[in-house]
Structures are given as C-alpha cells and as structure tokens.
Amino acid sequence: MTLWSRWVARTSATEGATPLALFRIGMGISVLVTLGSVWLHGLVPVLWVDQAHGGYRALGQGPWLVALLGGPQPAVVWPLLGAASVCGLLLLLGIGGRGVALLTLLTTKGLVDINGHAGGSYDELLANGLWLLVLGNGQATLSVSAWRQTGDWWPRAEVLAFPRWLAAFQLVLMYSMTGVQKLSVHWVPGGDASALYYILQQPTWQRVDMAWLAWVFPLTQLATLITWFWEVLSPLWLLAMWCPAVRGAWQLRAAFAAVGLILHISIFVTMDVGPFTLISLAFYPAMVHPWELRRLTGRG
Amino acid sequence: MGRHLRAAFVLFHLLAITLVSLPSVGGGMRRSAWRTPTVQAEFDAWTARLQGLGLAVDREGLEDRLWAFASGYEDGRDKVLGVFEPYYRLGTWQSWRMFVAPHRFPARLEIEIGEGQGWTPVYVARSSTHDWLAGALDHDRFRAATFRYGWAHYRVARHKFVDWVALRAAEDFPEAQSVRVSFVRYRTGSPEDVRAGVVAKEKREFPLVRSLRSSP
Image 1 (cartoon, rainbow over the protein chains, first blue to last red):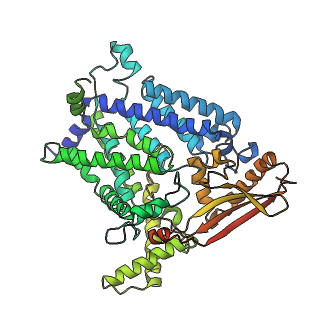
Image 2: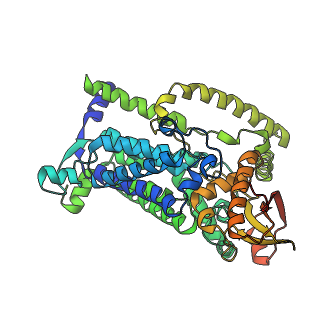
Image 3: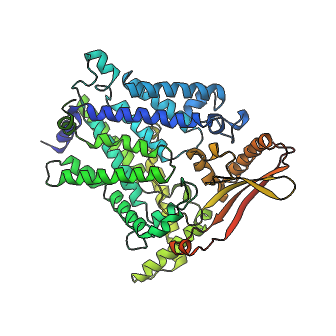
C-alpha cells in the first residue's frame, strides 16, 4: 500500500459521530456567547457601527459580506447580528446541516471582523472551528435533526473522521505555535521564568489587581515553565492520539488534557480575554476518540 | 475519484493552516515598536544571555541582524501565503502571537473630567471606584482596542476614541468643561519591589483634551 493510498484510506475513514457532535455544540454555544456578550454590554452600536452612525471610529466598508449589504451601519449590523444569533442557535440545536454551519461562519465572521481593533485570536479560532463544521457532519447525533430522523437524541451514527482530526490538529497547532513564539527571556527556560507573573500584572487583561502574586512568585515561575513546555510539546498530544496503542499514549493524553483544562480555567479566573477559554475548550471533545466515549458512556 | 479529491483537499488544508501559523512579527514589524522600552529590554537581556554563552554579539548588531532577518522572512512569508489567500478568507486564517512577551511598561487608561479646578478621575482601568463607562470599556473587545491605543502608531484611532468619550462625557457630566483621556505608563513592579512597597514612577502619555462646551 503506497503512502498516498494510505492517506486516501485515512481521510475516507468513518467513526462514531459523538465527539464531532459535542464539538458542534461547543461551537454553537461559543457563537452565542461571543455575540451575546457584545449585545448585552450595549456595544453593538459602539464597536460594530461606523462613526458616521454613532460608532466610535471610522470602519470603512467592513468585511466583504458587510460591504455587500451596505457597510457597517445599524440597518445592516443589527439584522446581521440577528441572523448570526439564529444560525448559532440552529447550530447548537443541530438543525440545518452544514449549510447552517456555513451561514453561521459567514455572518459571525462578518460581524467580528468589522472592527479589527476590537477582537482577538479567539475570533480566528471560532472561525477555524466553524469552517471545520462546514466540512464535517456535526449533526448526525445529539441534535434535533437526529431526533427527527431516528426518534433518538443520541443515536449511534457514523461520520467521516477527518473533520475531527482537523479539529484536533487545529487545537494543537494553536498551542504549539503560540509556544514557539514565546521567545521572551521571561518565558524561555534558563531565564527568570517570570513571564506569567508580569503578564498577570498588566492592567489591560487582569480581572482584579494581581500584586499578591509577588508573595507566591515561585509558583508563578513553575506555572510559566509548565505552560511553555506544555505548549511547545503539544504536538506530542496529537501524536499520542494518532498512535493510541503505544504504551503510555493514554497517560500522556490525559496529562496534556489535564494541564490544558487547568491552564484555561486559570486564564478564565485571572484574566478577561473574552470567550477564549470557552472556544478553546469546545475543541477538547475532538481530542477524544469515539470508541473511548462509547466505552465511557455506553452510548453514541 | 471523490476519495482522492478529499485526501488532496485535507493535505491542502493542513499545508495552508500550518504555513500561516508559522511565527511572524506581524504588526510589530516597525522600528517604532522595536524602540519601546519593553522590546529594548528584551534585546538587552538576550544580548547578555548570548554573550554569556560565549557568542560575540553586541546589542545594536543583534537588533540590526534580527531586523534584516525578519524583513526578509516577512517578505517571503507574504509571497508564499498569497497563494492561499482566498482560502484564508473562509475562516482558516491563523495568528497565534498570544502573550509572546510580558509588557513590562504597560499603559493604564484614565479618563478625567475638568470642572474648572483641575482634573477629576472618572474612569481608571481596573478601578472599582472610578468606573464611569466601565460597563463598556472593561469589556474584552474594548480592552483589546484601548490596549492598542496605548501605542504611538494608533494616533488616528486614539483621537477617534477620545472624540467618542467626549460625546459620552458631555451627556453624563453636563456641568463639566472638558474631558482628558490619557494612558498612564509605568514599569510593572518586580516581586521584590511589590513586597517592599516600592511605588512605580508613572508617566502620563498621549493626553488628549476635548472641550465639552463644543464637543464633536
């Protein structure tokens, strides 16, 4: 069997649908939280509407979809927000198939890209995830569609495996590439490992004053080193997924997942970086094989 | 045939997202950004570290060589990524420069009202007492924006932001004569400084004043 034919076989393989469905649910919630947060804070007419219509800065024509609809003005932005929210809800419920995933991507991306100053990497991660739901069938189970077809909310179903693998790859790519770019002397091993301490002192992102960390500085040094090594070595997580039968692979995956959960929860507690934690954790079901979930739950 | 096309597409996707995610200086590729105290301190520290390893490097030489390398790298990167540009528009763009270095000289957004007798703070970032507009300005998307406006090269957007603040201030403080928006820069205290109670020196940067009698 040639390398290419093995690749073709691998990308044509099917598997249980539950992990991808959980990923879809996580993405749906992420869309609603991302948009709802801006709406609930009354920031839609401030951040996503042009200065000429009450916003705080000139936004030009906006991304292509917004430009096509007439630019970042209230008559465009509010209906777009409504459409994106409905799409996000349909995605969460599992109605409308990949078409809804595509519409969710287009409308949500159209909104968050209007003001390039008021966003972060979480917007890109959200778009990355939504695109993968365009490629894969995330509604085969744990969805209204599945319930209507089978009378069961959680039927056993098979879907193409590659979209889940791409989601796993995406998550690890994010971790590893942010890790290798942490080249500050405060991050790289061999230095004072003070990066997290100083980052948590920045007023921009902190939730509350973090000066108290000065009294537990060694703990922040330990956390800095763990974070750096965990991010840089995260491709091992994917490798362990790829070779689940290798001795120690399961323990390695469990360790990576545990550190990841602790890291994201710590970020959420100490810093306000928007929906980053939520969107990142939405990818975590992709790190679990369907047969592992089935063994755990006896379903799907 | 469909199986082969799918396999080829997955390869294409993996290649496209891996290439765009490779390290990049991005918006930091400007001399003014490299001259900021935080970046200069990194060059100092790396020079000392490399010299400690026995390498013959000097401070200016290191920065110049890195600038030349980064310029060439970014040019090449742009050309390669241009091939995939349409695909990136579908939501596959990657940029993972997240907290690559601690900002040792951060800026704190402050808004003050002038009522004829000096300035009275009404908003100080992360303050629980000076919290006018905190519902908006403390939102993560506004934090991302005001973080940028603490950098010199965001001059135009900074002015627009201050114009908007002035409009809001005119509504909420009808007795006030003017509003001042500024970024208070300071060096974050080391653990030793904090424990010793050392107070950092602060410098008010980019102060912009708007009259509320004729706000825009």
